[in-house]
Image 1 (cartoon, rainbow, N blue to C red):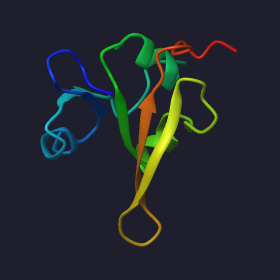
Image 2 (tube, rainbow, N blue to C red):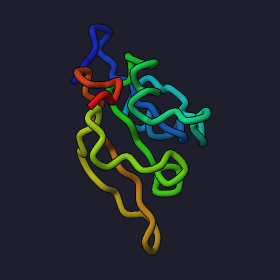
Image 3 (cartoon, rainbow, N blue to C red):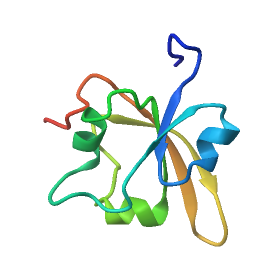
Image 4 (tube, one colour):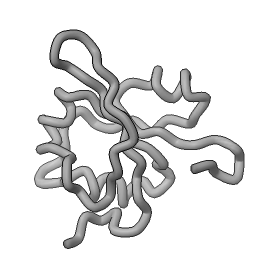
Length: 98
């Protein structure tokens, strides 16, 4: 997925991922605001093409698996049982409505 300016946009908590991917970066808050879920946050940030999230942030956001706004691209192992996951943000259904 590539934007008109040639750069994709990655949302996450660590800006290094955007640097290494030569992408724009949108900072994901470490915790959701109130009862916000990840699809609602992504709907408010429609420029986000991808979401890179670690297992700890994923737990704080209440999990991301099964959300209609995300498609898993790859899981990157870290140390021990920790990981990063790269998701493609789907524009259709990004509000998380079911």
